[in-house]
Image (cartoon, rainbow over all chains, first blue to last red; front, side, top):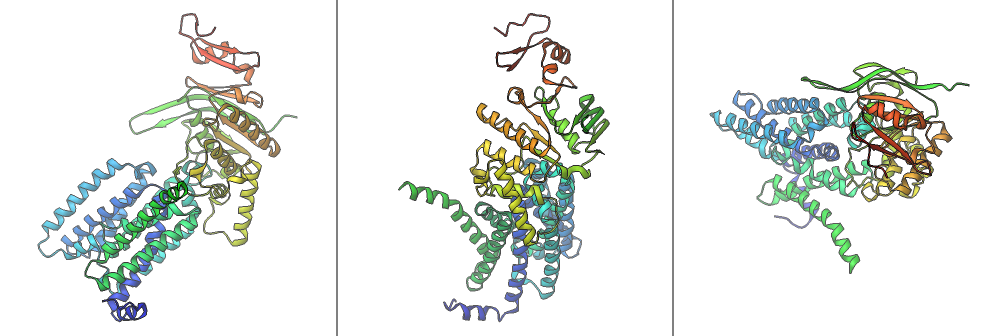
Length: 280
Length: 275
């Protein structure tokens, strides 16, 4: 249980390698998801991002069925799905009905793959809900390398991507290609999704990719500030979630999702509370 | 001395194609626009005014014909002349609930194409430049206000500042007067004219109502019935000219202030719509 001495509690927790790895991988994933998430929210593409993660699940289930590492199937399918949506263009990102239809079929396919698999599909299950406490040091290294690549590409294309995301027609008139920016963005989402599922899983990826960014969008007056807040919320929720779950017998994913959801509700309530107090 | 042509369009046809079909919006357009001109682009809804802009901006490839903008043939969005162009579209893709402040939108007009991040000194210079432009369009007080808190007229000033901030040679304004009342329409047109004249910027402005533009227009491009015709306001806004363009009776009325009303009449019948 908590000793209510934060240093002693942290000391106890970090004596375990699995907790150390969980904090390392969780931090990397939260930073990347927070950064990418801000653009997802700006572009109003959260459903497309959500669908990509589900397509990834089908890929992972397929990989389990044919006996290869599910992360390969996940990466291949999210990347393929990302490229496909990117090629269809910006409008495709917000075509909810079409995306929903494909998403439902892909999930069904994933269920079929799992049912056809004769062994215990624990790996596919862990990709659905995340298994942050089972991350090895080599996984942390892979996550770090993938995270650095995504962050560097995002930093290079920060302004053109921001311009196209905020005001596509003006950006195109200024000579930027909305088509190529869309493809680059979808590939970045696919890469970020592939690494983020280790922490929160396919089904709960919104908690790190969309909710912190939605919080940031309501608070930030500058895009750079928005990305900072989004990353901060994602990182703090991950740390706090890991910390609490070490002492309480509930999954980390639950705590992370609950924390970001609570912050979101608080942020949404602030204007009402402010108006109420002014009226008084 | 004859002014230098900044836009030349020869035998231009434009439209949209899908795998199944091709829709021609207008064909065989021929015109040129000289530096510093203020051009009104008018015509009914769906006639192809925005399509014409998209071709001139290099966003849409022409079906046939030749378009030269700032001395370069413009066939795609990779056109090098784009940084010398300012554009205010009819609709913006960003959410109008956004908390992003107006200054950030204007700054994108300066640095939106650049890769990576600005050094602190460059960022300071960009910010000063954006603030200066907001001052010129009379919107300095709006710099730190979120977009969601701005009215239609205030937003148009911000978009105009964004279009002007990169020191463009040409301004393309797609229905900037649509969300303004009559008084603000006139004020906004005066503001555009004043700023463009001071910087020798060519302006192409799409509007539905010719009247606020009449005092500043040097040329009118009229798009209707799959055709694009060009002339000065007195040439274009005559019953004979528009009747020929629409291939259907059209009457142009002028009041004592010179304001224009265009009235369509039923083909073959007398027009009873005017008093």
